[in-house]
Image (cartoon, rainbow, N blue to C red; front, side, top):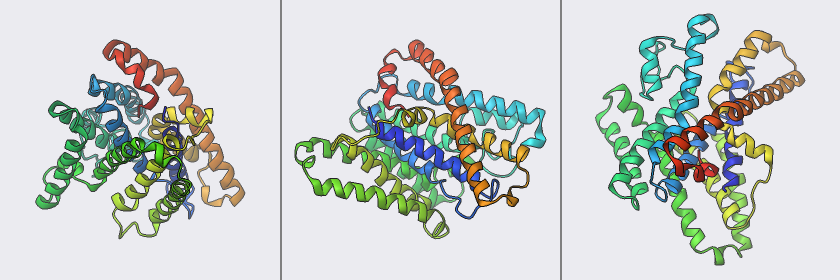
Length: 351
């Protein structure tokens, strides 16, 4: 079990929730950080796919669809129905049928606002995820052993071609964004971890290495927070967010796999399990509560801001855990039994 990755998932998801609570659309506070949790998710996804895919290629793509599609489709249809019935409560949701289909199929498509934004707002990141899964699945057809390397080559090639050709189409231009390189970082983490594990007998006895890994985690967390705002207009996201995220993920894995230092919190594990739900639905909980109950957030005191932030984090976590336990988990278990019987052994590290 990769317990530290579950902890990172929980922290990354709650970081994105905190960012939206404190953003200009929320409480409009000065220290609105946390959006780089998405970068952590991308790196983790790159690592997990390399970790699982090359070792268990059977039903790879089916397992990925089972993990991503059921709740995403359910949430998308709920939001589409609600936005159609009550459009005044959904400021940036394109509730048109012509936009719904590409949203459900994970095809980057311009919404009515002119942005590549699916019906379910945060589904944009799943467009990247599905693109990555397709590339990896194709790479597996060519070579199980070299699938991670082939996938990296494919992602880099698309980015380079995009830079050389300029605008081609909405979908291609989206896939050619440098953000996709963060999946490559995750694959790099997989190879570095594998190298270290082969030398575990030597490395695990190194106190200096353990201290270095701990310092790397701390430094990367500081860097990813500071770079989120200070240099966001000058340093590309794949560097300012992706590289610190990669170091954080690698360090968390090394602490667990080399030194036996891992999270044992049941709450962190459960939040990690529910992190996908937390990530996708939290904007509707956060902004729904703020607009209905606190329309004048600028008048709140500092103490009240803290209470609201804590309350929204707790509310989002509670609702998401319930959805995970009552809907997401049983639906995935059912589909795995029917479509990919061997997938149950992979649930501990599924992303």
